[in-house]
Length: 330
Image (cartoon, rainbow, N blue to C red; front, side, top):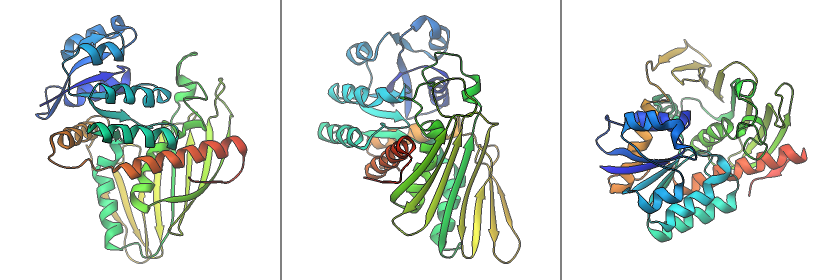
């Protein structure tokens, strides 16, 4: 059983703990690091967590094998390097880092220290993505032409003033760090490397110095094209669609539980995955995959080169949003 400590016990950090605590036979949480332990004392007591007021204190004093980061994006690189120095295995929530250079440096440091370092992309573990991957491998879509994804949430209208998310450092290019990075990761996983991007990002409704609507065009090295739109001031929604010469496949709910295969000829195929839950089932699956990697049972299913490339694509989208120019992916 891997004993983990978690840094950050906001909503998502609590979801991560709850997904495995008392349920998994391969990983559990024994400690937590938060700036204000009193605010999460009840949750920590319920889950059997010893609380520390900093990551440094937890790394120094807690009897843990691994660290899980559910902290602001801009802190990830520094915190991962601190965990590497302490000899702890690392799971970081997305985005892994905000630029390619720090992603490469952090992964190299972890490899040198012989500790596992992974990123949390819960959607990779949803059976809909497995089904889509299988259909692509079977060639049912014919020649791949285009992939498009639009995702929206109303978070920008609901977060209180001063929340760490409402910062251009943490939320550059509207929802590209909370939402778009998932879509980028899915596209890199399924369709390979991206050569260039062009992004337009604007503020229409959120009363903070962040954009709320971003649209990015992608050119893949394979020749196919892509499109990503994220909005943080609209009703919750998602559409992830792949178009080929013979068929299209569409995932049409934020839960990922609705997948439709739409052939050029013939009847549509409707597939439902209810009640698979991205905020519990998928989190448990990815944390157990992390434990399997630590114990040497199986490699983590997101390889380091894909982690780095997804960050590079995100970095290029952010740069394009700032400059209003096309940007080649480094």
